[in-house]
Image (tube, rainbow, N blue to C red; front, side):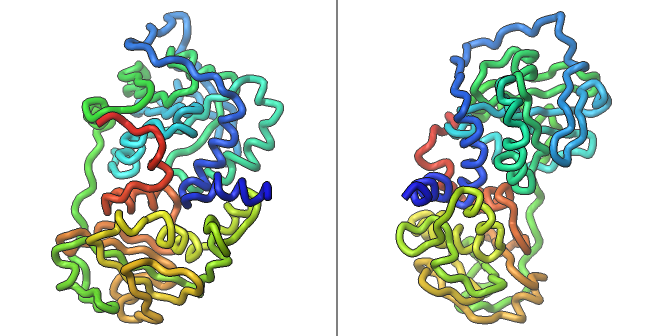
Length: 353
């Protein structure tokens, strides 16, 4: 019964499996400050250049002073950003934007100094599994020195930009509105992605270039048969297990795609989007989308050998194309392309638009 309860918490959406890993860690230290109308001034006695983080997992030791000459942005994660959904619009933008080579970013989890005794477990059970799924390198700041140095409220998403001289160009706490996003975009010299190329000639089931000329279309390629019993999160008949077992299960490319399709992208959000799944399913379906056993010509046209996901925009252009195990941050970007709000954000606090 405990395993079932954990499953419902951590596998409601594929992305929530990853968010659940972080939320499970960050919920252990509940300190959350109020966000002030104006952030406190920086302490002039604190040297930003000397802020350091030890090597963690595959990430080398980090000293901010060593990054002078680059524009640096730091996302400081707290309880509200990991469990309360703070920063949705900012995350989407960072997933989407193209950044110059001299702009680098890091995700820093704020944790109390006492959590250092759990450092190994935090790395192996929580942060380690998240590394391949998130866009930014991840560090844990035991003691919260980054939060303190930048005078940010504890427990919230903090965002800092350092210019090429290592000086603080921006500090922000909590949700980011459109004006803040525009300022961040300018400081990072970020660019929106260019439109993709026109889709190659294809026919898969009822989908083809003509039927996808004025609506978004999704082509999903499975590399193996997927049964209901293999998919985490179903109320009845799905895969059950502890959090780490669920995470290992969802690493399988076709099972990950099946989970997204079967539950995370709900029918009302997919209304008007054409879709087809190439592969075989047992015990689950995607309402309104057909299954096609094979599509070798389409695979060749889009360059998908195994599992993969292709999204065409409403002008018939390839807006998204990934093969193999699609990391969660890219699945979030795919949902954004389609205008679908992933379940990890529905029912959570939203950014103010």
